[in-house]
Image (tube, rainbow, N blue to C red; front, top):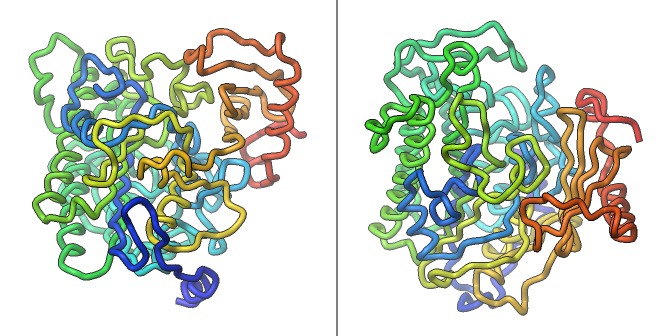
Length: 478
Protein backbone atom coordinates (compact mmCIF):
# COMPACT_ATOMS: atom_id res chain seq x y z
CA UNK A 1 0.00 0.00 0.00
CA UNK A 2 1.07 3.57 -0.67
CA UNK A 3 0.74 4.52 2.97
CA UNK A 4 3.01 1.72 4.16
CA UNK A 5 5.63 2.61 1.54
CA UNK A 6 5.56 6.19 2.81
CA UNK A 7 5.93 5.03 6.40
CA UNK A 8 8.85 2.79 5.46
CA UNK A 9 10.59 5.68 3.73
CA UNK A 10 10.26 7.84 6.83
CA UNK A 11 11.40 5.32 9.43
CA UNK A 12 14.81 3.82 8.74
CA UNK A 13 15.70 0.45 10.17
CA UNK A 14 18.75 0.64 12.41
CA UNK A 15 20.96 -2.16 13.68
CA UNK A 16 20.43 -3.09 17.31
CA UNK A 17 22.74 -1.25 19.63
CA UNK A 18 24.09 -3.02 22.66
CA UNK A 19 21.19 -3.48 25.08
CA UNK A 20 22.20 -5.62 28.00
CA UNK A 21 23.38 -8.87 26.42
CA UNK A 22 21.86 -8.14 23.00
CA UNK A 23 24.43 -6.94 20.49
CA UNK A 24 24.17 -5.49 17.02
CA UNK A 25 23.07 -8.11 14.54
CA UNK A 26 21.60 -10.37 17.23
CA UNK A 27 18.18 -11.96 16.85
CA UNK A 28 15.38 -9.48 17.40
CA UNK A 29 13.01 -10.47 20.20
CA UNK A 30 9.43 -11.44 19.61
CA UNK A 31 7.02 -9.25 21.57
CA UNK A 32 3.60 -10.03 22.99
CA UNK A 33 1.53 -7.34 24.68
CA UNK A 34 -1.41 -8.87 26.58
CA UNK A 35 -4.03 -6.33 27.56
CA UNK A 36 -6.82 -7.08 30.01
CA UNK A 37 -9.95 -4.90 29.93
CA UNK A 38 -11.00 -3.09 33.13
CA UNK A 39 -8.68 -5.12 35.39
CA UNK A 40 -7.86 -3.23 38.57
CA UNK A 41 -4.48 -2.63 40.22
CA UNK A 42 -5.60 -4.87 43.08
CA UNK A 43 -7.21 -7.65 41.02
CA UNK A 44 -4.14 -9.92 40.96
CA UNK A 45 -2.59 -11.84 43.82
CA UNK A 46 0.83 -10.36 43.10
CA UNK A 47 -0.70 -6.91 43.63
CA UNK A 48 -2.49 -7.83 46.86
CA UNK A 49 -5.71 -9.60 45.79
CA UNK A 50 -6.90 -11.97 48.55
CA UNK A 51 -10.08 -13.52 47.12
CA UNK A 52 -9.69 -14.08 43.36
CA UNK A 53 -7.11 -16.73 42.46
CA UNK A 54 -4.49 -15.72 39.84
CA UNK A 55 -1.68 -18.28 40.24
CA UNK A 56 -0.28 -18.05 36.70
CA UNK A 57 0.00 -14.26 36.61
CA UNK A 58 1.50 -14.40 40.08
CA UNK A 59 4.00 -16.92 38.71
CA UNK A 60 4.65 -14.66 35.72
CA UNK A 61 5.54 -11.85 38.14
CA UNK A 62 7.73 -14.19 40.20
CA UNK A 63 9.59 -15.20 37.05
CA UNK A 64 9.81 -11.65 35.74
CA UNK A 65 9.41 -8.01 36.73
CA UNK A 66 6.49 -6.31 38.45
CA UNK A 67 5.96 -2.58 37.88
CA UNK A 68 4.47 -0.80 40.89
CA UNK A 69 3.96 2.56 39.14
CA UNK A 70 2.70 1.65 35.68
CA UNK A 71 -0.11 3.73 34.20
CA UNK A 72 -2.72 3.21 31.51
CA UNK A 73 -3.12 5.69 28.69
CA UNK A 74 -6.47 6.84 30.04
CA UNK A 75 -9.28 5.84 32.34
CA UNK A 76 -11.53 4.41 29.59
CA UNK A 77 -11.01 2.09 26.67
CA UNK A 78 -10.53 3.76 23.28
CA UNK A 79 -8.27 6.68 24.25
CA UNK A 80 -6.13 4.42 26.43
CA UNK A 81 -5.56 2.12 23.45
CA UNK A 82 -4.84 5.10 21.23
CA UNK A 83 -2.04 6.13 23.60
CA UNK A 84 -0.69 2.56 23.57
CA UNK A 85 -0.68 2.36 19.79
CA UNK A 86 0.67 5.86 18.99
CA UNK A 87 3.04 6.68 21.87
CA UNK A 88 1.28 10.03 22.32
CA UNK A 89 -0.32 11.12 25.58
CA UNK A 90 -3.91 12.30 25.91
CA UNK A 91 -3.12 15.87 25.01
CA UNK A 92 -1.73 14.81 21.64
CA UNK A 93 -3.22 11.49 20.50
CA UNK A 94 -6.19 11.85 18.15
CA UNK A 95 -8.67 9.51 19.85
CA UNK A 96 -9.50 11.12 23.18
CA UNK A 97 -12.66 9.39 24.32
CA UNK A 98 -15.28 6.73 23.76
CA UNK A 99 -17.53 8.16 21.04
CA UNK A 100 -21.30 7.93 21.48
CA UNK A 101 -22.41 8.68 17.93
CA UNK A 102 -19.67 9.79 15.54
CA UNK A 103 -17.35 6.79 15.36
CA UNK A 104 -15.00 8.62 12.98
CA UNK A 105 -13.54 10.52 15.92
CA UNK A 106 -12.87 7.20 17.64
CA UNK A 107 -10.74 5.99 14.73
CA UNK A 108 -7.06 6.44 14.06
CA UNK A 109 -6.32 8.47 10.94
CA UNK A 110 -4.08 7.68 8.02
CA UNK A 111 -1.44 10.08 9.36
CA UNK A 112 -1.35 8.41 12.78
CA UNK A 113 1.61 6.03 13.10
CA UNK A 114 1.18 2.95 15.25
CA UNK A 115 3.75 0.77 16.99
CA UNK A 116 2.80 -2.00 14.56
CA UNK A 117 3.82 0.19 11.61
CA UNK A 118 7.12 1.02 13.24
CA UNK A 119 7.84 -2.65 13.93
CA UNK A 120 7.09 -3.53 10.31
CA UNK A 121 10.05 -1.39 9.28
CA UNK A 122 12.20 -3.76 11.35
CA UNK A 123 10.84 -6.88 9.67
CA UNK A 124 8.17 -7.86 12.19
CA UNK A 125 4.97 -9.73 11.37
CA UNK A 126 2.18 -8.17 13.45
CA UNK A 127 -0.95 -9.89 14.67
CA UNK A 128 -3.92 -8.42 16.51
CA UNK A 129 -6.31 -10.69 18.39
CA UNK A 130 -9.18 -9.36 20.49
CA UNK A 131 -10.66 -5.91 20.91
CA UNK A 132 -9.45 -3.05 18.70
CA UNK A 133 -11.84 -0.12 19.22
CA UNK A 134 -9.89 2.34 17.04
CA UNK A 135 -11.52 2.03 13.65
CA UNK A 136 -14.14 0.16 11.65
CA UNK A 137 -13.70 -1.95 8.54
CA UNK A 138 -14.58 0.94 6.22
CA UNK A 139 -12.27 3.66 7.58
CA UNK A 140 -8.60 4.52 8.00
CA UNK A 141 -8.45 3.17 11.55
CA UNK A 142 -9.04 -0.43 10.46
CA UNK A 143 -6.15 -2.47 11.95
CA UNK A 144 -5.04 -3.91 8.61
CA UNK A 145 -4.54 -0.27 7.55
CA UNK A 146 -2.56 0.45 10.72
CA UNK A 147 0.36 -1.96 10.45
CA UNK A 148 -1.21 -5.27 11.44
CA UNK A 149 -0.86 -8.21 9.07
CA UNK A 150 -3.71 -10.18 10.59
CA UNK A 151 -6.71 -9.40 12.77
CA UNK A 152 -9.29 -11.51 14.59
CA UNK A 153 -11.82 -10.08 17.02
CA UNK A 154 -14.03 -7.07 17.66
CA UNK A 155 -13.77 -3.70 15.95
CA UNK A 156 -16.55 -1.91 17.81
CA UNK A 157 -16.34 -1.64 21.58
CA UNK A 158 -20.08 -2.15 22.15
CA UNK A 159 -19.91 -5.27 20.01
CA UNK A 160 -17.08 -6.28 22.36
CA UNK A 161 -19.35 -5.99 25.42
CA UNK A 162 -21.03 -9.26 24.41
CA UNK A 163 -18.89 -12.36 25.06
CA UNK A 164 -21.30 -14.43 22.93
CA UNK A 165 -21.67 -12.35 19.74
CA UNK A 166 -23.25 -13.52 16.51
CA UNK A 167 -20.02 -12.84 14.63
CA UNK A 168 -16.40 -11.78 14.95
CA UNK A 169 -14.15 -10.17 12.38
CA UNK A 170 -11.49 -12.27 10.69
CA UNK A 171 -9.56 -9.71 8.69
CA UNK A 172 -12.21 -7.71 6.84
CA UNK A 173 -14.70 -10.58 6.78
CA UNK A 174 -17.40 -11.46 9.28
CA UNK A 175 -17.02 -14.91 10.81
CA UNK A 176 -20.47 -16.13 11.79
CA UNK A 177 -20.73 -17.80 15.20
CA UNK A 178 -23.42 -20.10 16.60
CA UNK A 179 -24.72 -17.67 19.22
CA UNK A 180 -28.11 -15.90 19.10
CA UNK A 181 -28.34 -12.35 20.45
CA UNK A 182 -31.21 -10.28 21.77
CA UNK A 183 -30.50 -6.63 21.09
CA UNK A 184 -31.37 -3.58 23.14
CA UNK A 185 -32.75 -0.33 21.78
CA UNK A 186 -29.68 1.84 22.37
CA UNK A 187 -27.47 2.49 19.37
CA UNK A 188 -23.83 3.33 19.96
CA UNK A 189 -22.08 4.60 16.88
CA UNK A 190 -24.57 2.70 14.75
CA UNK A 191 -24.01 -0.55 16.64
CA UNK A 192 -26.64 -2.01 18.94
CA UNK A 193 -25.49 -4.15 21.83
CA UNK A 194 -27.31 -6.94 23.60
CA UNK A 195 -26.94 -10.32 25.26
CA UNK A 196 -27.00 -13.87 23.95
CA UNK A 197 -30.05 -16.08 24.37
CA UNK A 198 -28.14 -18.99 22.82
CA UNK A 199 -24.58 -19.30 24.12
CA UNK A 200 -22.14 -21.60 22.39
CA UNK A 201 -19.03 -19.74 21.21
CA UNK A 202 -17.29 -17.76 23.97
CA UNK A 203 -15.21 -15.05 22.33
CA UNK A 204 -12.41 -15.09 24.92
CA UNK A 205 -11.74 -18.78 24.30
CA UNK A 206 -11.62 -18.13 20.55
CA UNK A 207 -9.09 -15.34 21.12
CA UNK A 208 -6.78 -17.60 23.08
CA UNK A 209 -6.98 -20.24 20.33
CA UNK A 210 -6.22 -17.64 17.66
CA UNK A 211 -3.30 -16.26 19.66
CA UNK A 212 -1.85 -19.76 20.04
CA UNK A 213 -2.27 -20.37 16.30
CA UNK A 214 -0.53 -17.10 15.46
CA UNK A 215 2.42 -17.96 17.69
CA UNK A 216 2.71 -21.43 16.18
CA UNK A 217 2.62 -20.04 12.65
CA UNK A 218 5.24 -17.39 13.37
CA UNK A 219 7.53 -19.81 15.18
CA UNK A 220 7.83 -21.72 11.92
CA UNK A 221 9.16 -18.63 10.10
CA UNK A 222 12.49 -16.85 10.36
CA UNK A 223 11.22 -13.35 11.14
CA UNK A 224 10.29 -11.85 14.53
CA UNK A 225 6.67 -11.23 15.46
CA UNK A 226 4.56 -8.83 17.52
CA UNK A 227 1.28 -10.10 18.95
CA UNK A 228 -1.15 -7.62 20.47
CA UNK A 229 -3.57 -9.79 22.45
CA UNK A 230 -6.32 -7.42 23.57
CA UNK A 231 -8.59 -9.50 25.78
CA UNK A 232 -12.05 -8.34 26.88
CA UNK A 233 -11.97 -9.95 30.33
CA UNK A 234 -13.08 -8.73 32.84
CA UNK A 235 -15.13 -6.00 31.09
CA UNK A 236 -18.87 -6.29 31.76
CA UNK A 237 -21.51 -6.79 29.14
CA UNK A 238 -23.13 -3.47 29.98
CA UNK A 239 -26.24 -4.23 27.94
CA UNK A 240 -26.72 -7.55 29.77
CA UNK A 241 -26.45 -5.69 33.07
CA UNK A 242 -29.13 -3.22 32.01
CA UNK A 243 -31.40 -5.87 30.49
CA UNK A 244 -30.84 -8.82 32.83
CA UNK A 245 -29.03 -7.45 35.90
CA UNK A 246 -25.88 -9.51 35.31
CA UNK A 247 -23.07 -8.44 33.00
CA UNK A 248 -20.41 -10.93 34.16
CA UNK A 249 -20.55 -13.37 31.26
CA UNK A 250 -18.56 -16.59 31.57
CA UNK A 251 -19.24 -20.20 30.52
CA UNK A 252 -19.00 -21.52 34.07
CA UNK A 253 -18.10 -20.39 37.57
CA UNK A 254 -15.16 -22.75 37.89
CA UNK A 255 -13.63 -22.90 41.37
CA UNK A 256 -16.14 -20.32 42.63
CA UNK A 257 -19.27 -22.34 41.79
CA UNK A 258 -19.90 -23.39 45.40
CA UNK A 259 -19.20 -20.00 46.98
CA UNK A 260 -22.06 -18.31 48.83
CA UNK A 261 -21.92 -15.36 46.46
CA UNK A 262 -24.17 -13.76 43.90
CA UNK A 263 -23.88 -15.01 40.31
CA UNK A 264 -22.41 -11.63 39.40
CA UNK A 265 -19.60 -12.07 41.94
CA UNK A 266 -18.95 -15.64 40.84
CA UNK A 267 -18.84 -14.50 37.23
CA UNK A 268 -16.46 -11.63 37.90
CA UNK A 269 -14.02 -13.82 39.81
CA UNK A 270 -14.20 -16.74 37.39
CA UNK A 271 -13.55 -14.47 34.40
CA UNK A 272 -10.30 -13.24 35.93
CA UNK A 273 -9.19 -16.72 36.96
CA UNK A 274 -10.05 -18.03 33.48
CA UNK A 275 -7.92 -15.30 31.90
CA UNK A 276 -5.13 -16.07 34.36
CA UNK A 277 -4.99 -19.68 33.25
CA UNK A 278 -4.98 -18.70 29.59
CA UNK A 279 -2.05 -16.31 30.06
CA UNK A 280 -0.23 -19.20 31.70
CA UNK A 281 -0.97 -21.43 28.72
CA UNK A 282 0.57 -18.89 26.37
CA UNK A 283 3.73 -18.76 28.48
CA UNK A 284 3.83 -22.56 28.51
CA UNK A 285 3.47 -22.59 24.73
CA UNK A 286 6.45 -20.27 24.33
CA UNK A 287 8.56 -22.59 26.46
CA UNK A 288 7.38 -25.67 24.58
CA UNK A 289 8.30 -24.04 21.27
CA UNK A 290 11.67 -23.09 22.78
CA UNK A 291 11.22 -19.39 21.98
CA UNK A 292 10.56 -18.11 25.50
CA UNK A 293 14.08 -16.75 25.88
CA UNK A 294 13.64 -14.67 22.75
CA UNK A 295 10.15 -13.39 23.58
CA UNK A 296 9.18 -10.43 25.76
CA UNK A 297 5.67 -10.76 27.16
CA UNK A 298 4.13 -7.72 28.82
CA UNK A 299 0.80 -7.87 30.66
CA UNK A 300 -1.34 -4.89 31.70
CA UNK A 301 -4.87 -3.44 31.75
CA UNK A 302 -6.42 -0.61 29.76
CA UNK A 303 -7.74 1.23 32.84
CA UNK A 304 -8.92 0.68 36.38
CA UNK A 305 -11.68 -1.68 37.56
CA UNK A 306 -15.33 -1.28 36.61
CA UNK A 307 -18.55 -1.53 38.63
CA UNK A 308 -20.75 -2.36 35.64
CA UNK A 309 -21.49 -6.10 35.95
CA UNK A 310 -23.71 -5.91 39.04
CA UNK A 311 -20.96 -7.43 41.22
CA UNK A 312 -19.88 -6.38 44.71
CA UNK A 313 -16.74 -4.23 44.62
CA UNK A 314 -16.28 -4.54 48.37
CA UNK A 315 -15.88 -8.29 48.14
CA UNK A 316 -12.85 -8.08 45.84
CA UNK A 317 -11.34 -4.64 46.57
CA UNK A 318 -10.16 -4.43 42.93
CA UNK A 319 -8.32 -1.11 43.25
CA UNK A 320 -6.43 -2.19 46.36
CA UNK A 321 -5.01 0.82 48.23
CA UNK A 322 -5.94 3.26 45.47
CA UNK A 323 -8.80 5.74 45.27
CA UNK A 324 -11.23 5.63 42.36
CA UNK A 325 -12.16 3.19 39.63
CA UNK A 326 -12.72 3.38 35.87
CA UNK A 327 -13.60 6.95 34.72
CA UNK A 328 -11.62 8.54 37.55
CA UNK A 329 -8.22 10.18 37.15
CA UNK A 330 -7.34 9.30 40.70
CA UNK A 331 -4.81 6.48 40.89
CA UNK A 332 -7.46 3.75 40.94
CA UNK A 333 -8.65 4.76 37.48
CA UNK A 334 -5.26 4.80 35.76
CA UNK A 335 -2.58 2.96 37.79
CA UNK A 336 -2.66 -0.62 36.52
CA UNK A 337 -0.73 -3.89 36.76
CA UNK A 338 2.41 -4.10 34.64
CA UNK A 339 4.26 -7.43 34.44
CA UNK A 340 7.22 -8.10 32.15
CA UNK A 341 8.35 -11.67 31.44
CA UNK A 342 11.41 -12.53 29.37
CA UNK A 343 13.33 -15.57 30.67
CA UNK A 344 17.06 -15.04 30.75
CA UNK A 345 16.77 -11.29 30.22
CA UNK A 346 14.32 -9.83 32.75
CA UNK A 347 15.50 -10.70 36.24
CA UNK A 348 13.31 -13.18 38.09
CA UNK A 349 11.37 -11.84 41.04
CA UNK A 350 12.31 -8.24 40.30
CA UNK A 351 10.22 -5.19 41.14
CA UNK A 352 10.61 -1.68 39.80
CA UNK A 353 9.15 1.65 40.91
CA UNK A 354 10.08 3.23 37.57
CA UNK A 355 7.18 5.45 36.50
CA UNK A 356 6.03 4.36 33.04
CA UNK A 357 2.80 4.32 31.04
CA UNK A 358 1.18 2.97 27.88
CA UNK A 359 2.78 5.58 25.67
CA UNK A 360 6.20 4.15 26.50
CA UNK A 361 5.49 0.89 24.71
CA UNK A 362 6.22 2.61 21.37
CA UNK A 363 9.78 3.63 22.30
CA UNK A 364 10.42 0.37 24.16
CA UNK A 365 9.35 -1.85 21.27
CA UNK A 366 11.26 0.30 18.78
CA UNK A 367 14.47 0.13 20.82
CA UNK A 368 14.28 -3.63 21.23
CA UNK A 369 13.55 -4.09 17.51
CA UNK A 370 16.22 -1.67 16.32
CA UNK A 371 13.57 0.51 14.67
CA UNK A 372 13.21 4.29 14.65
CA UNK A 373 9.89 5.63 16.00
CA UNK A 374 8.42 8.97 14.94
CA UNK A 375 10.01 12.03 16.51
CA UNK A 376 8.32 14.25 19.09
CA UNK A 377 6.43 11.44 20.81
CA UNK A 378 5.49 11.30 24.48
CA UNK A 379 7.36 8.02 24.78
CA UNK A 380 10.45 6.91 26.70
CA UNK A 381 11.77 3.38 26.37
CA UNK A 382 11.77 1.33 29.56
CA UNK A 383 14.03 -1.29 27.95
CA UNK A 384 16.91 -0.31 30.30
CA UNK A 385 14.69 -1.13 33.27
CA UNK A 386 13.84 -4.50 31.74
CA UNK A 387 17.54 -5.14 31.14
CA UNK A 388 18.52 -4.29 34.71
CA UNK A 389 20.30 -1.07 33.71
CA UNK A 390 18.68 1.62 35.90
CA UNK A 391 21.57 4.05 35.34
CA UNK A 392 20.69 4.15 31.66
CA UNK A 393 16.96 4.61 32.24
CA UNK A 394 15.56 7.99 31.19
CA UNK A 395 12.55 9.38 33.04
CA UNK A 396 9.56 11.50 32.14
CA UNK A 397 9.37 15.04 33.40
CA UNK A 398 5.68 14.26 33.89
CA UNK A 399 2.82 12.07 32.66
CA UNK A 400 -0.42 13.64 31.47
CA UNK A 401 -4.08 12.60 31.12
CA UNK A 402 -7.35 14.27 30.19
CA UNK A 403 -10.90 12.90 30.22
CA UNK A 404 -14.04 14.31 28.63
CA UNK A 405 -16.90 12.52 30.39
CA UNK A 406 -18.64 13.51 33.62
CA UNK A 407 -17.78 17.18 33.26
CA UNK A 408 -14.15 16.53 32.21
CA UNK A 409 -10.90 16.51 34.16
CA UNK A 410 -7.11 16.57 33.75
CA UNK A 411 -4.27 15.01 35.72
CA UNK A 412 -0.49 15.13 35.76
CA UNK A 413 2.02 12.90 37.59
CA UNK A 414 5.52 14.27 38.29
CA UNK A 415 8.15 13.37 40.88
CA UNK A 416 6.20 12.15 43.89
CA UNK A 417 3.25 14.39 43.12
CA UNK A 418 -0.10 13.94 41.39
CA UNK A 419 -2.32 16.89 40.46
CA UNK A 420 -5.94 16.70 39.28
CA UNK A 421 -8.04 19.55 37.88
CA UNK A 422 -11.81 19.20 37.60
CA UNK A 423 -13.22 20.42 35.26
CA UNK A 424 -10.52 20.71 32.60
CA UNK A 425 -8.84 24.08 32.10
CA UNK A 426 -10.93 25.93 34.68
CA UNK A 427 -11.28 23.83 37.82
CA UNK A 428 -9.50 23.99 41.13
CA UNK A 429 -6.34 21.90 41.32
CA UNK A 430 -6.00 19.09 43.86
CA UNK A 431 -2.47 18.00 44.81
CA UNK A 432 -1.32 14.74 46.39
CA UNK A 433 2.01 13.25 47.40
CA UNK A 434 1.32 9.75 46.06
CA UNK A 435 4.59 8.36 47.41
CA UNK A 436 3.42 9.09 50.95
CA UNK A 437 -0.33 9.08 50.29
CA UNK A 438 -1.06 6.41 47.70
CA UNK A 439 -4.81 6.62 48.40
CA UNK A 440 -4.85 10.36 47.60
CA UNK A 441 -6.74 11.12 50.78
CA UNK A 442 -4.85 14.28 51.78
CA UNK A 443 -5.11 17.22 49.38
CA UNK A 444 -1.99 19.33 50.04
CA UNK A 445 -2.64 21.98 47.38
CA UNK A 446 -3.17 24.78 49.91
CA UNK A 447 0.23 24.11 51.47
CA UNK A 448 2.19 24.10 48.19
CA UNK A 449 1.03 26.88 45.86
CA UNK A 450 4.33 26.81 43.96
CA UNK A 451 3.90 23.10 43.13
CA UNK A 452 0.27 23.71 42.13
CA UNK A 453 1.45 26.46 39.77
CA UNK A 454 4.00 24.07 38.27
CA UNK A 455 1.35 21.37 37.78
CA UNK A 456 -1.07 23.88 36.27
CA UNK A 457 1.48 24.93 33.68
CA UNK A 458 2.17 21.30 32.80
CA UNK A 459 -1.53 20.71 32.21
CA UNK A 460 -1.95 23.91 30.23
CA UNK A 461 1.06 23.20 28.03
CA UNK A 462 0.20 19.54 27.42
CA UNK A 463 -3.19 20.01 25.80
CA UNK A 464 -3.20 20.33 22.03
CA UNK A 465 -6.66 21.47 20.87
CA UNK A 466 -8.82 18.83 19.23
CA UNK A 467 -12.18 20.39 18.31
CA UNK A 468 -13.76 16.98 17.71
CA UNK A 469 -13.49 16.17 21.37
CA UNK A 470 -13.77 19.61 22.89
CA UNK A 471 -17.13 20.07 21.18
CA UNK A 472 -18.57 16.57 21.35
CA UNK A 473 -16.90 15.76 24.65
CA UNK A 474 -18.34 18.92 26.21
CA UNK A 475 -15.08 20.07 27.74
CA UNK A 476 -15.24 23.66 29.03
CA UNK A 477 -13.68 26.41 26.97
CA UNK A 478 -10.21 27.51 27.96
